[in-house]
Image (cartoon, rainbow, N blue to C red; front, top):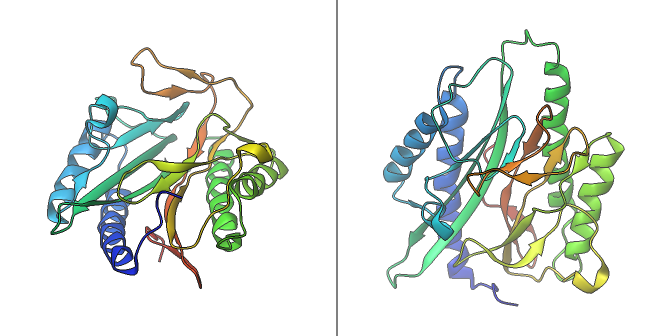
Length: 261
């Protein structure tokens, strides 16, 4: 179990989580119709500087930007670009950052949210709002049900899949959450569907994981965009994406990126 952490490391994870909360809350407050993905990413970089953290995404396996910004039928790993956000757009942004301690060890936090840019004029706004709340609720249901040394990655996937399907939507199977701590991506893989037991692992106490339901309105096949990063759903399909960094303590579960309080 790679990412078991000491209590003093949790304090460092909390600080990075708090910085990330400030960044996400500010981006959510400031995002506007007419803004671009690049504008949002630049703002995120200013906020990272202010919070004394660095992007964990920029340069990761060659990713070119500080955050991921995915629009409408883009599921995840969108590269921020010059397209102005329009009325009715679903915009997902995924932000991961880290701070090094006095020994030079980096601690990471990772979170994402989807917002609807709309004055409510679009006829399919209700559907989009429902998709957002279902995706967010799926994440909440996992948080409420994690028990250290008992809950498995299969259990997490099942909670997400059962709930999302009960609402008439589809969890994305190819992408999911992950362990986190000294690296942005650590084991285990945290699925959005019920994986076979032989691939399932128990979530141990004193570890941090990212749970990130990615939900599609229809059950379209997904593909990689020609830029080799952005994951696309069918042309006319919407998706939503929420993610939190979660500390699984011995006594309780703590959301280190709780941007909703």
